[in-house]
Length: 348
Length: 286
Image (cartoon, rainbow over all chains, first blue to last red; front, side):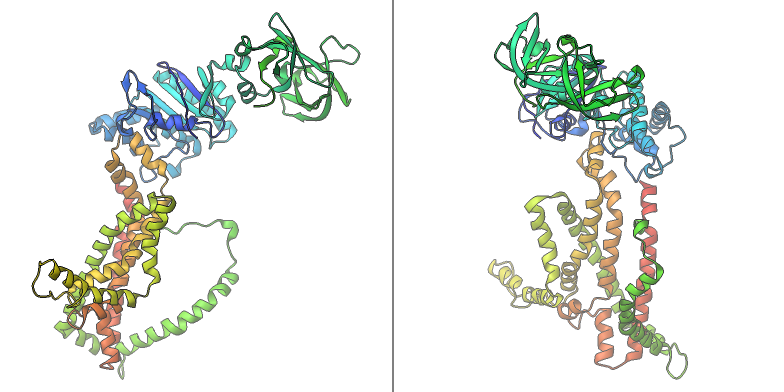
């Protein structure tokens, strides 16, 4: 769980997510910023102040912990007032700011409750109020919605986002949930094995992934490994074995290095793949063996494999009407511009 | 202290509970309740109801002195055990890996050794020609051996040592149950290491402190072996006094009266202490 050579610049007022699988170093990085772990080298600056070796209590950084970490022996207003008491503010001032912060998270009237008398979502909001009441220039959030169920999570995402806008705060948000990262962030840093694989806006992350890992980790994708047989106008043609030929645009990251004869991997999102009606089979179409269909409400995922054995899935919007008629083999096609080709073979 | 509420799915039926408890109830009834009731009965009844034995105890200044000494030694024993035990429990709860095992062994191994052995070890250390006196004489600090054994100090020292694990273990258990994130949150919100401990960890560990103090006090007030060996006849404590009444003077009725008074004192202190240090009270004042 180490972090290696991470360089990250967060802009003031920005919502930046650290996204990665467990063990990718995202929490370690957050703990370094909070002051609970120390880097072997390098610097951490907040607003031009070097805090690399500063004690956590002197950093003035707000933090929302994974399981909220509310003080169970204090009431809601004592919890929220804690950072103000530590800063020795006058009593009346503390009271005023606490009720302001509680109003901000819509918890007015809950002042004298204890944390164990609150629901998960309410505890979450108390943690938010406590982390923001002292107006820190930077707020860290360590998977703050991990313990909530889906419905509440979606609602809290919106709430956190609007709170951040209202306060104009800079937020660094750690999550392993790619949907959450895409939905909330101005920019997302995807971490893997202690390094940042890609740092870009949610749209770029999804549409222009810079590595196979990012393409695979963010959203669903089909990976087809093969060998480059032709390269023209940024479109690479790959021989994927078993007589399969697939085409896709060369990714920005591989544009300079990719050459004919090299191993490469094509990535195409399931929603970019079209199922064809029987009979009309255009150039570039492939056959896919259908194994099962998964109905999720908005989508039908058709899961199967290509002729070369590579696993493959197609998402069909239910609203668009389903095309399959129970056949075992389906014809699929995608626009080469929607697929991306990366240098290097196999799954990461 | 509030009892932890168990999962309702694992609840036993009343019949099963009684069945499971019946052996220990039978044993307690036979070996504890019956003899104690017998002793108490004898203290009140001597050819009809009488408070004669209680008056006898009341009128003896020696008994008052012994009660007073027992009380104060027990109080100091609690204070010392708390002052020594809390840091040890904290260290145990906060160290992991082999260091944690070493600290835990230092606390637990003495528990496996008989109290008798541990008390004799103190005699060996404190006696006239014991280790402490020898070292002091060799260092030239004293010329003639000090009288260390058979003093209140010796009793206090030995009792604190013997009872220390009963203070450490409950405190350790509560400290272990406090999520580490709470201390981190306090530090993050602006508390220095000491304030984080004082405002968060300490108040949350008070139920363990309360249990430890109660354990040590109750055990100390009725302690027999260690005070009898290390304290000798000059630093008599209640336990030794009761034993004397029974084994030397064959005065069962007075022994019963003293036992009853001891029981009453223990009960009162337990209740007062629980009231003063209940969890609700602690959290209310935080």
